[in-house]
Image 1 (cartoon, rainbow, N blue to C red):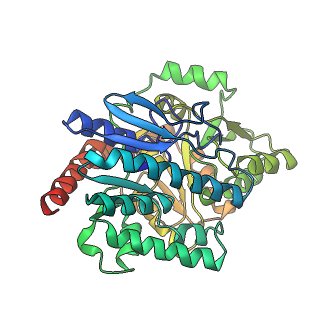
Image 2: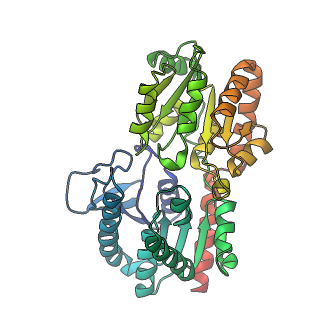
Length: 406
């Protein structure tokens, strides 16, 4: 498995690929993960070395390849980071793939599946491509990528990866639709969404929630929480602007948990407006996420406006659902459609802070029993339909099918 960012439960982000790798090993497979030696949210090295370093987690061999880690602050630095991983991952994948039955490559960025496709062709083994975001489309629509030449090259690389993949795993229906619209790929695309590790999401005792809430100075506060990456793609300015509308309501507080390239900018916005109803917290380990999520009274899931972003179904949504709290989705996206379908919260227009503030006030004014009902609707549904164990079953079937044809 080649994935640029690989996080375990001891890290701060999604442990989707760790879960898959661990479960595949438990089922009798041998899995080696090649990833970058970086803590992406902190933009710093994970291990203080210039050499590759190997670790083992529950039978999963993980090799951390050396990369340029100081990528914050400019697009050029980010490109250097990508290039450094292209080189180091190519070397390590060539070494590791000598005895492989298949190669599993995860975007983003596109450089990861591109390396996988080349090595797979050289080694004559099948390559399976997991698409977590459609690039370069996502970068173009969010304004991250504007150079026409770079976009043209990226689109050629994208099609190259689709054509040379034996199978394509899509995280959302929107992603699947996008890919199928670019060529004759429908026969080899499968939807394997994000989901929830039911073992991780156990009920947190109310006394522990009270202790955490008190330690954060949130007693008697209605907590509207966002937990996740703080990037341009996450549309968090909408949440800060919503906090401006509610600045005089002393009972409601906005809590941001996480890190990313936009966090400093968001903190400056709050500081300049002297907003006392916004609290920024650092990222938390995956193993502690359930506890901090229990502090929330409702969850916020903002999205950028535009048709492209309608296919958004992020991992944080499933964490929110499993935490049994009402969810407010900004944007008529796949996430919103699911929340509406199961009556787990409210959906409004993207990038509309006034609507968001009004929705927060609506949830705040509800009785505890009404909020509990919305939360339980989501909790029951996600446990029945988005158990990650079922997703591992899907992957195993895809692997078996691909290998039988190869």
